[in-house]
Length: 340
Image 1 (cartoon, rainbow, N blue to C red):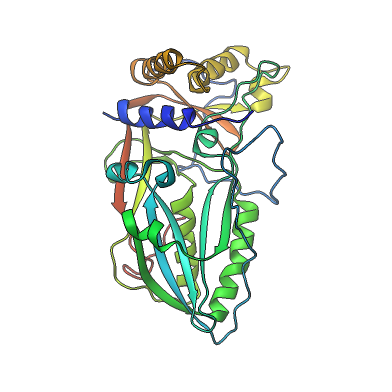
Image 2 (cartoon, one colour):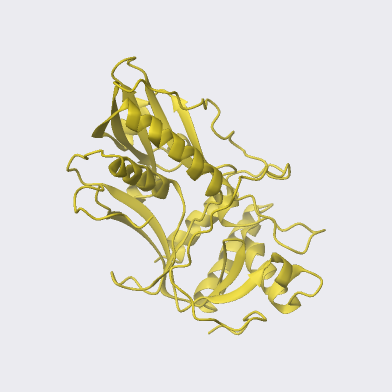
């Protein structure tokens, strides 16, 4: 099936509308946990299922990362532009919903390159699953990956966003970074939209960290700093989409919930929660689904999160969802290592 923009619009409305006590715990008792839950890495990247189809081809002009000469000097650029700018222009820029990338320019060849990390099958599919009538368990198309291609689209990044020099590195450092990118890309494979916190307070507990485009750029900057790069002193802000909740309740994985011996009550609750996020067949159904989503999240204080292939029940609370655009300094500015 080929899904259009409906799921992205539902996600956007959820952020705008919801932004302005649970009893369905799984069969396993709550355990003492370390927060935030560490993002899970894998030994290799699995092949994608043919059921997952992208409306827009992932990395259509991608190329292998070139090997630079050791004596080359590579300029590194911070790139940022509004999400879905190709469809909506600067609309989401006014809400500070931004996409991040990094650019490189070789002084020896004059060639420049762009590197970014994003969803293989669009943001809506990474945030909400498909519900198939013949399969009990929700089906996820939620892989993300790095994309490297020749050229920097100056107009795209400058017109409504940012294109600014942040550091310069040697060819040797670039080649070392490239090896790290391959490892990072093969082991960190699932996109995670949400940051989940106990409250908006700066020192509140973080339950889950997101894993999306900005986190990849932050990891890249940190790797370059580890290799010896010295960054310019400029302000760098990033978009975070945060859910606010009491302590998350672990429910189980696909097998323990939806398998033959699974918890049918929890399985039905999860499917019911995700049902309104399916692509609507009419305008009337679209707005009806929005009302159902508000009812579940705001009135019933429930949100089901899929993270590290596990399901969690979040007893969400006010202000429920918030979009922030906050400064995260470049690595050398405060002499601290980013926890990424």
